[in-house]
Image 1: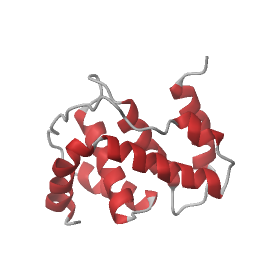
Image 2: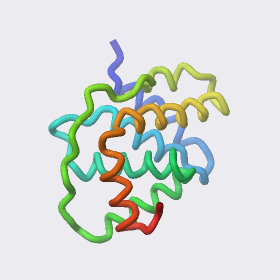
Image 3: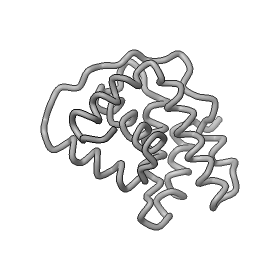
Image 4: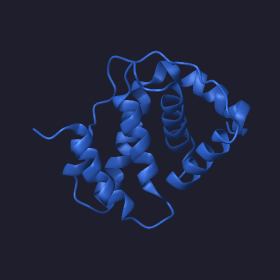
Length: 139
């Protein structure tokens, strides 16, 4: 059986081959990270993934714009709060994204994946909105 990590690696070959911008690879990273986070995942990884999903889904940021936001936040070392892990992480999986035809259909599925994972983390939305407003002035 192929692991979700191996499927993500396969998806990465596709996303990294796409032109920049919009850099959809960043969106796939954030969806995968938030969907697969567990108790051992560093809080910074979860926060950055959710921040990216929020900026993409609710503010139409491209992957490149999300990556730039991540870089801005990473410039100042800080301690990141842990967020409660939701039971469900979205109805769309990396395997569903790979099942879509490469090109516009797969790109649309990456966006749908981001929406699905972001919705699953809805209990953490307010914390992410406040962080983005405070640190990036967005929202």
